Image (cartoon, rainbow, N blue to C red):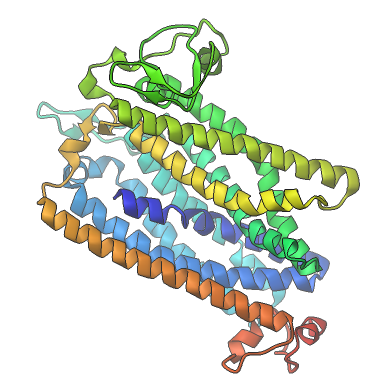
Length: 463
């Protein structure tokens, strides 16, 4: 489950946010009559479709794993929090239909009609995120039920089960995070092109629009991250203690940047900042922070699990802080000179920002899941009670098959992207490979009759 989630979650930012970024570029192209913007939107829509197809495979595997690997949780709690998965399924089918319409609409629909038909696409992506985050938030702060004499949930209140105390902080933190991640990744592709000397408007526009979106959202995400950490402090104090490796309940608690927690409560390594953890939690050094020893050892993460959650959280915060500085650098240059930064180091950092954001997505998931241990449903069901009793040999066989499938699928995804990129680059250079199809040529001119000329310049001129 960890392997499949860690793999699938890398695709989530593009499934949720790439449609919005693509439509933003599409709108710019129509509004300003910008052929380059329309060309970028057309190409990004092709990437979006390929990514969605890959997400179908990885998401389907996850769906089966919920039933196969977690029968205890799904059998007991499925009626309480299962609505989130139902919402995600409906959103998935709607998104598939809208993507098909959007791809079909290039050349076949009037420009503005095409755009307005695609406008609900980002909303369906957000609806899918709504369902999944609602389910995860419920696992962190379960609500909307009572337990009968045998311990089974009854009297389910769907509204309370969906809108749990952690839902709001988790959802907005997740949405903003995936949008800025997609923005930095897409901009990073064009940052590499700019570093290689491609200073044409195609690369500058391809960089500027997604990077601007990401730069605007970066400080917003920093504030939302602080907010969700404070929500964890109030709603899941033991989990907060794990992510901050706080051993004993106390005031004037120091903040450790990295470091390792040992079974006896001692901490080795890292950077100790006196009183900062109490200040961050409650805006005062006198704020009391609950420690891991406030509950029995069986009800809290182990020292190793706490250290993993702590490192994941600190990596996420460190990268987020560096991205804020990068966004401020970009904003200063744009407001002062109305142009892109000139430093090669800026574009080097921008090229790495996308990979750094994907790392933070992984770290955020690790913090959420590992910090909750040993609970699968916080304070209601342990992982050991929820997981399948399948023999170890069978599990290793299943795991091996999943690894092979994912390697092949993700390898195919990267191969297709590289091939598409090569075709587009050759088209821009005026070279058409012998195996180019009419659809490939069509992709270079979003609207209007198909180009008769095989040169990229001629195609753009027709537009």
